[in-house]
Length: 122
Image (tube, rainbow, N blue to C red):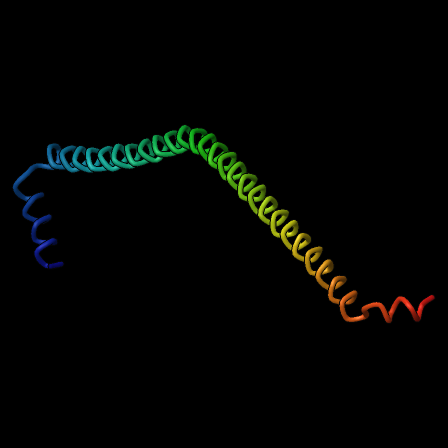
């Protein structure tokens, strides 16, 4: 490949005079460099556009996140209220059942002692 590259340049300068060949090579080189700079700037513009879009969307995302947080907080509060209400109802039922058991125990104690228990205490 190196041999063919050297032969290309030798043929180029033999067939085309220097007064035309050097400006053509310089023009092609400048064209290639300009094209590369344009391509690089476009990719930078796309990056800038993406960051601008992300910034704009970030504000909307923050608002949506706040709204979702409020909804979740309300839901947690509602669930907590339900749990507390159920806990209070269970406690109430347990107290009623305990009172009923205490009454039954008192009746059973009275039945077991009978009149003998009262006579001994007097």
